[in-house]
Amino acid sequence: MNQANLILNSLSLGYDKDIYSRISASANYGEMVALVGPNGIGKSTLLKSIAAIQSFRSGEILIDAKNISAISQKVLSTLISFVPSQSPKALNLSVFDMVSSGCFNRSNWLGEANEEDKALVMETLDRVGLDGFAFRDSGRLSDGEFQRAAIARSLVQKSGIMLLDEPTAFLDIENKLVVTRLLAKLAKEEKRCIIFSTHDLQLAIKLCDRIWLMGRDHFTEGSPLDLIENGAFDSMFKDSGLKFDKTLYTFI
Image 1: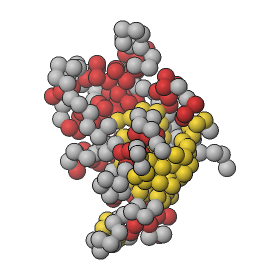
Image 2 (image 1 turned 90 degrees about the vertical axis):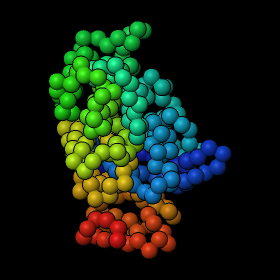
Image 3 (image 1 turned 135 degrees about the vertical axis):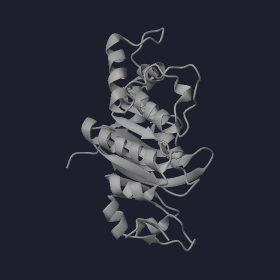
Image 4 (image 1 turned 180 degrees about the horizontal axis):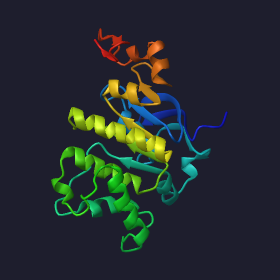
């Protein structure tokens, strides 16, 4: 069996002390992975650690068998992109300019995209369902439209691994489904490794290839079906009385 494209080995998160330990997980290009767990458990910290935005205390992260500590920031920007939970909106910034900022790792010293990247931006806007939006004010987009623009910005970065911190947190039911289905389509069609944190367990189970579960006692990973059969989801809310319903894919 080939080695996974992204591997976490015994990772411990935190600053002055461990906030979560013994994280071992993997993911491959072409897969969509949901990162789930209760509030405050460390999901954002884990994603930022993988993206090298913040340091981790111990363990290792490997991308294509290379330790990220040995990869330069410039090279890392071609391997990993990160979409925060709330990207700031800027008035009078066109959608085109917002998305083209994702080409930063290839632009000239003035930050200008070349003609090839300009064409890529237009193509990517069409791919995420924003055809005709290029010259609209990005600060006046709806939440769902803005989230798709943020995903487009990540796509033009041309990274094989896309990390998204709760990309559907502030969206209505329709846009949650639209965005999650878009991510699943991108993972399959473009062979990207897409990892996103979410509280929507039902969507994660139905659409994801793999789930990373940050439970109260320990970290678990596996296919949605395996985790359901193993009763792994019951570890999310220890001592709360909540139980995971295998039929409804939710807690009762």
